[in-house]
Length: 183
Length: 405
Image 1 (cartoon, rainbow over the protein chains, first blue to last red):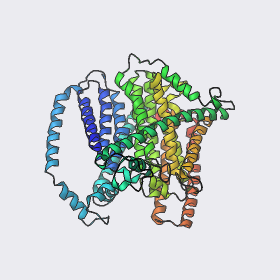
Image 2 (cartoon, rainbow over the protein chains, first blue to last red):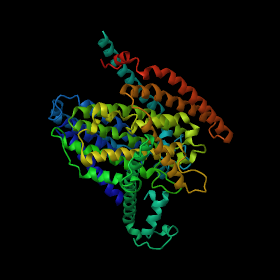
Image 3 (cartoon, chains in turn orange, yellow):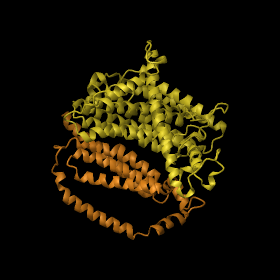
Image 4 (cartoon, rainbow over the protein chains, first blue to last red):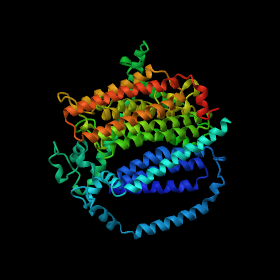
């Protein structure tokens, strides 16, 4: 009951913040509402017993990505009123709606139970009482670490590679600009 | 109901309210009156009580810190410090708080009203969330979340957003420059802080703060001095405290992002910073001074409190001693010094844990010795490499590198 009440409270906050991102004319306010909705996402993850992902959500999206977005929004020409990009509201809403429909179709038709059973009952069963749900809920961080370093090793390494590539790309761009400046 | 069985202080109060069957052994006096079917009421009552206690304890702690900081800095600077209002000047922060509350609340015309109001709130509220997860004693903690270490890092990273919001919403150039400087500094110092914390996690083999405390046979400050020093410097920077108080460097930027804030909104920023100092000291005690552990003739809570006050005194000592760094010095210290040092620390620790996964007493001493050798050698080398950059002889060349021409 108590937990349910908090769940609905967070949901209302999440939805209203997301709508405010779309409908506020001020671009900077949109960035701030984006940060708040990220915080609500983290709260959702906490309530689903995915503490690690929730915490990383705060660390990466609220602590770093939102700040960078807010910094880059400062460079926009007309922050207070809507800009050209802001006027694309209806097109972007349509695209978002298509995305929402397709992803909810996927989620509703996916065999979640079978998927988790396949992962947990497979050869990489690492805990003695694996397969039972409570073990996962309590040790979700442990499980995440073990799965990342066994089953999803390639995906994990690939994402690291993409991040490294973007880092080097950013450095290279800066380098080119600095060389131009010094001439 | 998750935290009930985990935390002693939560369970103790919960069981004196609820008539739950499994609770009867915990009760000392039989005064419970809420039936088992309404357990959510007793749960929320207990939760609200502890939230109340923690929030008010944090506020009282801030008053104590303001008083202690002024007295100590007075001693450092060979003067008396506040001594008029109450015994030893104890009521000075109270007078200060009343003064702040009754000041006129001014909102600048060019400010973005909504964000202007939200920023100080976002500074204060997250800090409250750190206090409940810290183990203050062998049995005294409220929750023991399984990802405590990362949680602490995540919560402390929110304040950079608040600083940026405050800087922008004021509609004032000093405030924006202060905010951008602050964000550059906070984001840079989060990285060495996180990597040093990874060293603690490697040794503990657990992300929960109780696990970190349990793992420290030798306190981490002695066991991994390199990680301790990098974490201490990085958290000083995260707290915006001197010598890293570049965001509000009075002589350069008036008051940085707080320039246009007055009355209780300014008071909230002030409160947030002091509370973050207290929380951060508690985290350093947990990570590096073995938390509540100590010889058992003194209760564990007293041990924790003594170490806590000691770490806060270190922060005050920093503030009284070091001159303020310039912004380029701060950035080069983060990226050319602390970042590499913390990486070396993690690398050495990971190698040693790979060789001795379950160290005995002798092996622990050996590991400590290796860590100290690495610490002294790498700090010496990095000092040699960095010192010409820090003295400021190469300003011209560096301003080209940063594109500041």
